[in-house]
Image (cartoon, rainbow, N blue to C red):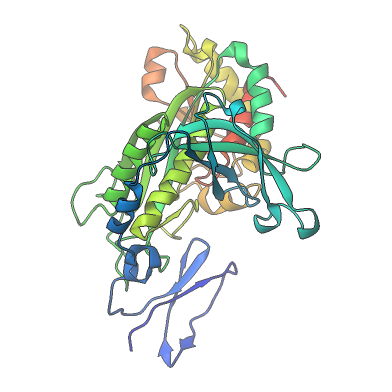
Length: 407
């Protein structure tokens, strides 16, 4: 009888075993291990979401909504530092700014943020986006999270980043973030990959076109349009080097906005993929071996870097970054650098996690100066170290404090 078994574990060095009388082989996909064997039906059929008839929902979305009632979906970062949670409430007015919205609370003991005997966490609205799912006047509300004494939760890195942005406001910092991600079947294998092996080597997939090179474009296009509708400053998208890996870009945006846009765009991406019965992983090394990992390269500039002869200011910033390698590595993934250890190996278009490096048009370094910037003698730098599952607030915060505030 054909089968496929998925086991989520963290230990490395598993050995082949026999399951139900069948010999199986362990293959590591990021933090997932799966056993490969033949299958009789497509994996996506296993997803309960994919099995539901989405057209049935349309008649309910088509119901008239009272003019004095809108649905506000509050969105926040959970205790893992990379997961997003949400819940919806009805409000009887259309808010013009976040402060107009009521504060709310949620059960922090169910999101890895509190104990059951003191579980209420405050949700403080910070940014409003149009809701691309419910449409109309309905909204998405990005929130910060606070404990009972109104101190930020451990995963609320936005609070610190926003303070840094205010201190550096006169320098007019801009950020552009390149968010990479990988689409997975419901069994944990990259979408479209052979069930009993691997696709051909990397080479034809980056920016590719064709059914044998690109998988999941429907999700990508839906996400792009939904972000534009919501008000996210999404600036582009492309298929990446590894098949089933994609990237979209946000910005350049000033101050805290890029971080807000990344978190909302991640929520929208997960929400759209949910409807297709596909999993989105931000694991920075979803497949071990000679396959590219996933990052969130951060393009950063200040007013002086963008001015004439700004290349000198860029080089000064790079020199400051070279002296703070460990600080930035710890800030660039939610596990203090542990996730990036699997990705930043000096191979597959990455630098070594242990060494700082920079260069012009070089993708094997910590900091890249794009060729166009070098030729124009002004512009921005690209920090290639942040992992795909980084908290963009932590990344932007670290860059500002090192390069502008000299901390």
